[in-house]
Image (cartoon, rainbow over all chains, first blue to last red; front, side):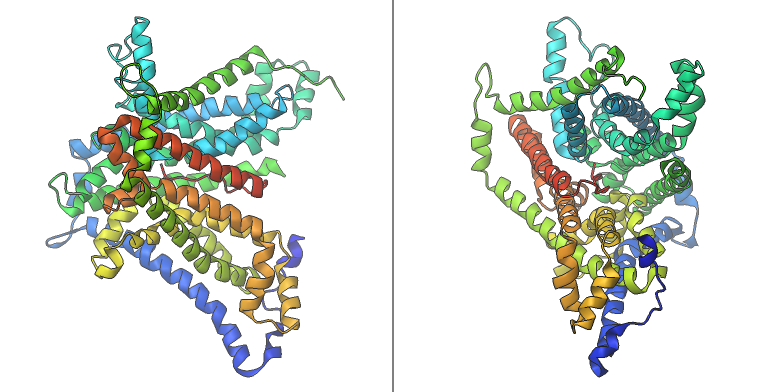
Amino acid sequence: MQATQAASPAGPAPAGATGGMGAAAGKLIPWFFVVLFLSYVVAFLVAPTAVLVVQSFTGDNGFTLSYMEGLADYQYALAFENSIILSLASAAVGLIFGGLLAYAILQPGAPKFMRSLVTSFSAVAANFAGVPLAFAFISTLGTLGFVTVLFKHMGVDIYSMGFSLYSLTGLTVTYAYFQVPLMLIIITPALEAMRAQWREAADGMGATSWQYWRLVGLPILFPSLLAAFLLLFGNSFSAFATPYALSDGNIALVPIDISNVLSGNVMSDPQVGAALSTGMILVMAVVLVIYSLVARRAARWRK
Amino acid sequence: MAEVKTRLSLFNWAIILIGAVFFFVPLAVTGIFSLWQGGNHYGFSAYALLLNTSGFWASLFLSFRLAVETILLSFLLLVPSMIFVHLKAQWLKPLFEFISNLPFVIPAIALIDGLTTLYTGPAWLISTPNYLVIPYVFLALPYAYRSIDVGLTTLDVKTLTEAGQSLGAGWGRIIFWVLLPNMKAALIGATLLTLTIVMGEFTFASVLLFHTFAVFINDTGQNAITEAAALSLFSFLITWLFMLGVLITGRRNPATLAGAH
């Protein structure tokens, strides 16, 4: 199937049948669309990014590292630290809980309807974006949220115990609403590719469940799990709408700091915003390069 | 066949139960909140109020219009060029694939920073909400690309095109009458995903100060929490509706993950 389509691109094109002008136009029109697409990408994605990078290295007297070095200032270092901690924490929660949930509903004993319910709900929840999600959690776990008040009536004041929805912990809980379903969607193909025979063979040789997972299951799944973790990390790291709506722009995260520079809420040079954006792109680039290397390895077991 | 385990362990049930509570409670609470009218009164006044708010309809229609424009522009940019690359210029495919992943690397907030730095005019371009369509195409790009790519690889494009050409059809006719109808499922999938993403998009619109639906929800939430709860629930239902469409039209479509958080 695949091979027939990968046939030589230089194959004879019967376009000449229309002859003359038609043939020339027929050859040029497709290239026009390719060039159109590439120009669009260059003009509105590549060029703006390049401008940011250049701007973050340009001061009044030409090239300078002062803006990138400025990222080490307490305020911005804190934003990067918070963003990274939040992304690690919410990726870990998503990985563990999403993985266990996916495993549970894939068990042969799980009712069929439950599997399709969970899968379709996951597709929705993974796409349930930003602002509405933030309000749903404010209604639930905010200072006057339903669950907060309910707990208070039962004598448990979660806010006096140190919990706050508007902190990194609160954001991690909120992010779990899209990270867990995303994990479930990503990891399901890898879990489905685990063959029952592997488990049977391990059982036959007298392995315990723990031994099977430690020596067979997890090593095979490891690349897939690592790839999923990296995707979840990136997903959380670039999130803006959810933390913005939740904290009203008052939490130190990189995307929030960038928006504060952009909207003029804080007095700072545009270069500071550019440096923050460049830093963010760098982190994302590193994460996704590692991801693509790991994902290639993860695909090995899925033939 | 060895004996198949037919019952879930207690641990698995516990996981499923915790998941059910975690995912159901915020939705249920948002629903209750949207019906609250102060004190012990419950009713649909928040909903009634919204239906009579001009900002509600205006922002909803604006977001919908932008979504349709995004879909049209995405298809115009992607479909002809991808068909051509698939047929005649396979060597360009890695480049296209690379570009389709770029929006993941460049977060929305960084892209909007770059766009506002680079383009300070012309006014007809950047002063109307239509400007948002430009970055929205990139939000949708990874998913649109993947859907169309799946559509193309499952079709025998070469044979279909040659058959069309030997019958005297030009490129336009082949694309519109032969290829597109055969890629219906893939295109519907891409359309619904783009709708979902654009209807909920907040980052670009809020930085550029355009009153899209997500911005309207956020503004509402500043002073009217019950209306905001009603809007959040409504937004969840929209997402549900579109994603249901995606699941029905493309059972094996891998492009079911959006990312406008």
